[in-house]
Image (cartoon, protein in one colour):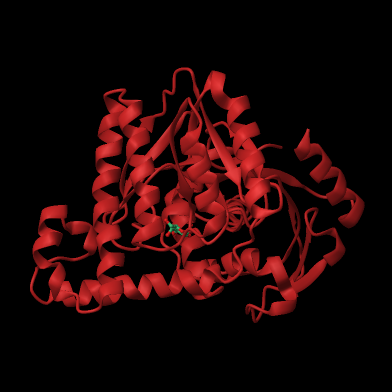
Length: 389
Ligand code: GLA
C-alpha cells in the first residue's frame, strides 16, 4: 500500500515517536466548464482516486520540515511557521507553507511546526491539480492536528486563497473545491458565482474516462493564465457598462450576441464568447447526463475543445493532436483538453471495447507528430480527503 510506504519513509527521516497521522487528498479532472470559474460560470469536475498521500506529526517548536518522495533530490526542506513567505528555494513547499500562512490570515494561527512527508501519484504538471491536492491535503492535516473548526468547503477556499495571495496564481475555485468536496462516482456541478453545488452521478455504462497526458509541461502557463483572466475582466467591464450583469456567466448566448460589440478589442471579445458559451454548454451537458444522453454530453465536450482552441487559444499542438486523433477513433464519445491548458492533459469518454485501440492509435499518432510519448490513464472517480491511519 502506498500510504504504508509514506509512513515508513516518515519514520526513517523523522523518527517513530509520537502520533503520526496518514492522510490522502485526490487530484481532479474537469469534465466540462473550462475557464468559466473566474467568470461566475459553472464547472463540472470530479475527484480522482489518484492524488497525494501525506504523513504528518506536530512539533513542539516552530520548525517546518517537509520532504517529498516525488522530489527526493531536494531532500528535507526546512522553514518556520514564523515569517512565512514564498521563496524560490522553498520549491514545492511553498504550497503547504502558503496554506499554513492562509490559516493565520483567516484568524487561525498555526503556532507550532510540523514534520511532513508527501507522495503524489498524480503525474506532475499534468493539469490534474497536483498543487491544489497538496493545498487541500495540508488544510485537512492542519484541521486534524490543530483542531480548527473549518468545513471541507472552507478548506477549498483557504487553499484557493493561499494560491492567489501566497503563490501569486490567480486561479478560480474549481480545483480546490472539486478536491475538498469530491464524492466517488459523482461529478460536482458547481455554480462558481454562488458556490451552490449538486452531485451528479456519472453513470457511463460500458464506457471509461481516459486521461491522456501530453507530457508537455505547462511552462509559461501561469502567466498566460493570468493574461486570459484579465482579458475576460476587460470584456466584462465594457459589457457591464450597458448590460446589468455581475459576471460573464450571467449572460445567455443570445444576450452575448446582442451586447458583444461593446467589447472593443477583438481578442477580448473572443475570450468573452468562450466564457459565455462554455458556461451554457456546461449547463446543457449536465442536463444531458441526467437524461442519460451520454452522446450529447460527448458532443458538448468536443465543442468545448474547439472553443478553447479557437476562441480562448489555450490548447497548443500537443493537446490538439491528442484530441483530434481521439475524435478519429471509433468508440470515442467525446474528447477535450482539461484544466488550464497550455500543456497538461485531455479527458475522453471511450467505450469499453475501444479503450485499447484508443491508447494504441492516439499514442502512435502523438509520437509520430510530437516526437515523444503521451501517457494514458483509465481513471475512477473517487472521494474527497480522508485520514487513513
Ligand atoms: C486551472 C485553475 C482553475 C480553472 C482552470 C480552467 O485549473 O486552477 O481555477 O480556472 O484552470 O478551467
